Length: 98
Image 1 (tube, rainbow, N blue to C red):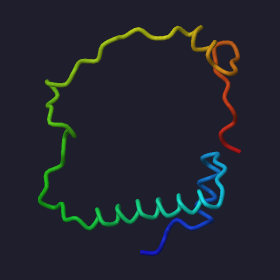
Image 2: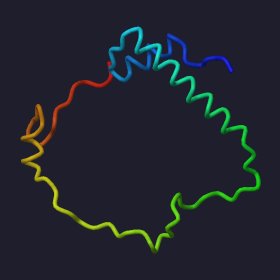
Image 3: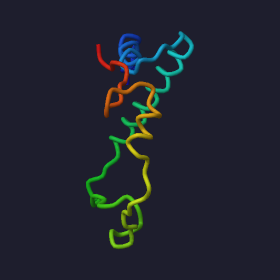
C-alpha cells in the first residue's frame, strides 16, 4: 500500500481541524494515520461471508437495556452565562469554515 496520507492531505486536514502543528507533530500524525489506514485495509481482507450481521454490539438484548430517564439539567441562563460570548438566546462561536 502506498501512503495515502501525504503532506498535502495532512496540511488540508490540519487546516480543516484548525490545528497548528509543528514539523515533528505533523510527521507523527502522518505516520499514525497511515498505520490506521493500513489496519483498515487488513480488516477489509477478512472473509465475513458466513457471519450474520450484528444487531447489537453488546451482550445485552434490548429488553435488558436501561431505560432513558430524565435527569436534572442546566438552565438556559446558566449555559448562556458559561458561554464565552452569546447573543440573546444563542451562543456565538468562532467561524468554522472559511
